[in-house]
Length: 284
Ligand code: SAM
Image (cartoon, rainbow, N blue to C red; front, side, top):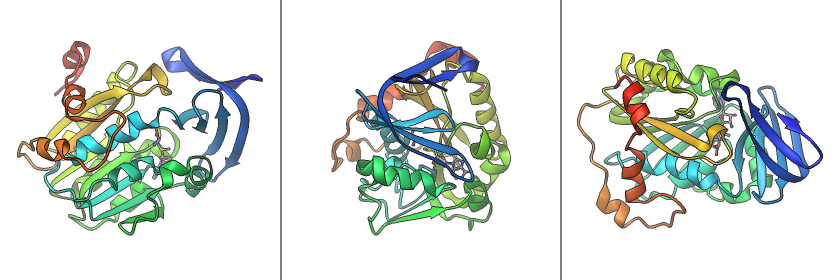
């Protein structure tokens, strides 16, 4: 990460690339027991949250990520009533999940309450549903939470975690996926942010392999734009506990009772179409 008078830059060394935003001023900084959280006011992207030097969310473009982490999985599950979000401390994913009237309960378990405190102050629009009676915000390690979760507790688990380093590292291995499998109902689906295929095909294959080894029957990756993350292009992966094909609920999407900025049925279908290099490299 580098910061001159007017620019915030995230330099992603493994990719040999960097992303910069012109900043007006720094608004906030806190070192929690888990990570360093910063918030900047930018000239053109609204506010920007950074965790341990990595861009996390900005006012202007977070809809790509929050919509594509929530709506594809929820419109694929036949009846997503009980949802768990691991991570998601900025509450953007929570807001999207709560737009679904069929969802009855959402538990959000983020390890770091300082992220949510910063979101409440600098991204209030992402926190607008936090007081929904269906929502429960908890602060704990998601790895521990799922290791202790009752069997069959959730229809959908969304892992909206940081990169596989620091507190987020243990969210990308077979032991964690075993816990997720047990905590899901028989037709349950696990969804996880799985980095960028442009730089991380090795990790993506490892995730697919670990999900499969832990007993998930089908694994499906979809991609979407993610302007402020390394490469600007991101992926999420769904793992299905049941072997039945779950059709996309096209009628429910056509009649969805809320507006999106990015997501619709065509985008959902297109996101599942994988580019040739991924088809060649992904061990399906
Ligand atoms: N939603 C954001 C976006 O729009 O791109 C990015 C993800 S969110 C900020 C990542 C969250 O994962 C952080 O709030 C972090 O505290 C949380 N996290 C990391 N490791 C965790 C763990 N082991 N258990 C629970 N939450 C964790």
